[in-house]
Image (cartoon, rainbow, N blue to C red):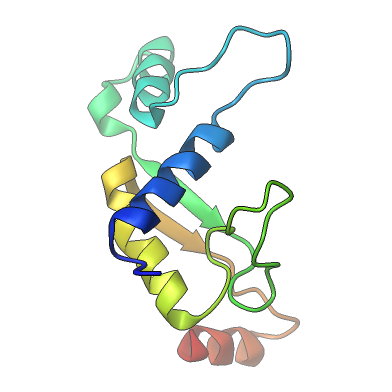
Length: 117
């Protein structure tokens, strides 16, 4: 599958919808993360444009099962090419930063993991 193409965008669009679902019985949440940012910014008395969306990655690559329980591919799972495709499509979803967790038992191991990534 072409990770930079339409199929990948459709997949990430589905992921976006899934991430913004609410508990059963509650009013459906908007699927647009920008809407949530605007509302949260306004409620906090901030200019919504000053609030950025960040996607946090705790695990990636082969450490993440490739398929979710619904059979869809998980973001940041798979090969280097898969992860690059995920990173490329996130800005189209309004994500302006990615926080990747490189924490390891000691600083040297964290630095080695950053370099490997």
